[in-house]
Length: 397
Image: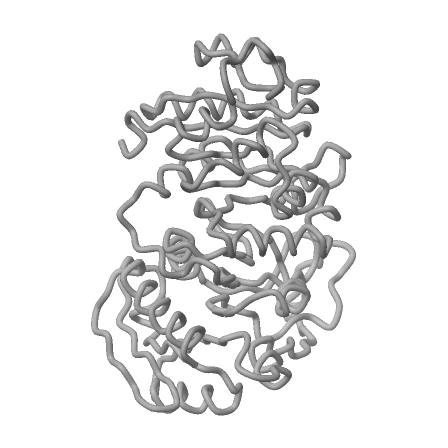
């Protein structure tokens, strides 16, 4: 295990998700890590310090002025740690950490630490989407910090939205990934990836969709996160767990996908559009289940072309745009046509027989200068080749 004998400080901020930190500590220990805990004063109102004393054998650090600690405890704790995981990381803690503050046990330890830091955000969805929080996340990411989540789900307020803390298993996976030998060349880049199918409802039980599994997009998201990028994964309904270290935005229809991408486009360096977007949707969805008949006529209207819209409204070279072309004939001809028509930087072209459902892809990378046939690659290998090109475009143009 990559966490065997690793020394992990778990920093806990004051939010309802603090109770999950108990399971996180146990999971890290199950993977061989040695764990110590630091809590903010507010966190101690949500989860009892004695719990962590029992789990780790060492009292958690709460008050850096506590006379029971010998010397400067935050300095000692930072020197001991191989990695610091902050879970939950509240909006307040993220903002104060980005500003360089050091007035509680967690922040003071972070300021003394020069190793890998992983934040697991947890907050109300409007707090997560607020410009101030996003600026803090971007600044911390630019400084080299990694993030896991948040994910879409039920929040403490009873509402649903993007702000729920990732589960302890996902946080532990992301912690392990920090110790892999994987290159971290994408640090500082924010990559948005669309994946899976879109679904257009006909009535409460029927819909129009396609056979996209989402596996290619999820492989790219996984590899991008492991290489250090901040990753936003906008996904239609799939049967795949989201990769560790990604912000997951769940959508259903093409218009929901359009809204999710447009809302975030100004904040990203690259958009990799692997989602299989339904070309058409019903003019209107029936309120009740449609009854059987010998013949049914459906009136359809064209869905927005999200990638073309991005290409035609882009100013300058940002974000880098990558599209996918899946065809049954004249593949490279259609790929070159897509490159020009949609004004994208790169098209990943593959035959339908090679690109649906399997573990491998046979792809060609098409840009304004050349066509690069890659041959048969696993989805993860292809993901890295695509990300290599994205990195080049984002850093050198």
